[in-house]
Amino acid sequence: MNKLKETIILALLFVMSTSSYAQLSQEKWSEIITKKEPAWFATREAYDVAENVLLYQRNIGGWPKNIEMHAPLTNQDKQKLIELKSDTKEITTDNKATTQEMLFLSKMYAQTNDERYSKSFLAGLDYLLEAQYENGGWPQFYPLKKGYYTHITYNDDSMVNTLNVLKNCIENTNVYSIKPPQATLDKAKIAFDKGIDCILKTQYKQGETLTGWCQQHDEVTLLPAKARAYELPSLSGKESAKIVLLLMSIKEPTPEIINAVNSAYNWFEKTKINSLKEIRIIGEDGKISDKVMIDDPANGMPIWARFMDLETSKPFFCDRDGIKKDKLSDIGQERRAGYSWYSNQPKEVLKKYSKWSRKYNK
Image (tube, rainbow, N blue to C red; front, side, top):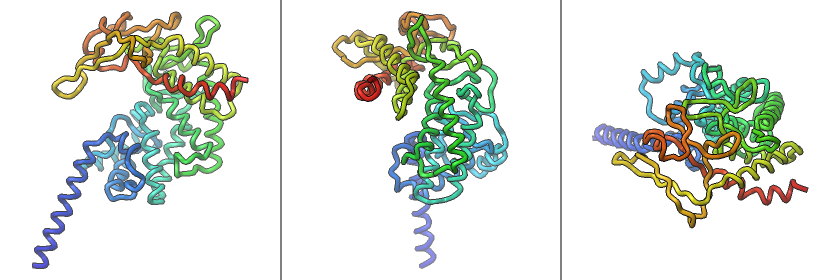
C-alpha cells in the first residue's frame, strides 16, 4: 500500500512538473527575463531554464538569436549543443541576443550565488568587449558574418543594448548582481567612451544641421548604409530614439553630446506626424495580416516614420524590390504587415527633454 501511495505521489509530481513546464513554454523568452518576480529565479523551474541558457552559450561567450531558451530540450538536443560549443557562427547581439541572456544569468545569480552564472555572465561581457571595432562601433554578428551584417548596427537597438550593459557595469547600478573585476571595468569604460564617440561621428548632417541616425552605418566610412532590400540608407525615427535616450542618460555630458541631443530633439520635433493612426488587421490565425494608415488629426499621439530621406527627412517605404514609395499602401501586403514602418519611441525623448535641457543647456 505504501509503495502504491509513493507511486501515485511521484506520478502527481511528474504531472505537475510537466504542466508547469508546458505553461512556461507558452511564454516569451524576453518576457520571462523581464517580468518574472525575483523569487521565481530561485525555483527549480528557473534552474532548468538556466541549464538551457548555459548550454546555448558558445565558448566565445555569446549566444545565437531568436531562440526560446526556456523550451524543453531532449538529451539529443543537449548533446548537439555541447558539440556546438566551439562553433562561432551566428553569434550576435541582434534582437537582444547575448545581452538578454546576461540579464537572465544575473537574476539567477542574485537568488542562488551559483558561480556558474557569474562565470557565464563575465564571459558574455568579454565577448561584447572583443566584438567592438576600433572606431567604437559594433557589428551585428561577431565573429563577422559576410554581407551587411558587418555594418555598425543600430538596428533594433543592437549597439545601444550593448552600451547599456557596459554603462550599468561601469556605474555599478543595481541592474546586474554580478560585479566584474576592475581590469574588465577599465576595458568597459574605454569601450563605452569609444562607442559614444562613434555615435557622435555617425549622427547625420543635412548641410550643417545634425539630425538622426541610420539603422546601420558603414564600418569604414561611417556613412548611412543599406541592409536588406527594403532597408535603404535613411534616417530612422525608431532607432534614433534609443540612441538619444542613451546620450541623455550620461551624467556629465560633453558639449558635443549636448549638441547631439539638442539637434536630435529638434529633428524629432520637425519630423513627428500628428495626423496619422495605424490600424492593424488581424487574421484568423491571430497574427497581423495587414496594416492601414488612416487620417486622425484628433488622435494627438505623434508617430515617426522608420525610414526618412537622408536629405529631406521625408518618410518613404520599400518593398523587396528596393524601390522607394511615398505611402505604406504603395507596397505589397507581405511587407506592409511584416515590418514596423512607424514608431512612437521618440515620444520618450520629447517627454524627458525639458528636464534634461534645464540641467545641461546653460
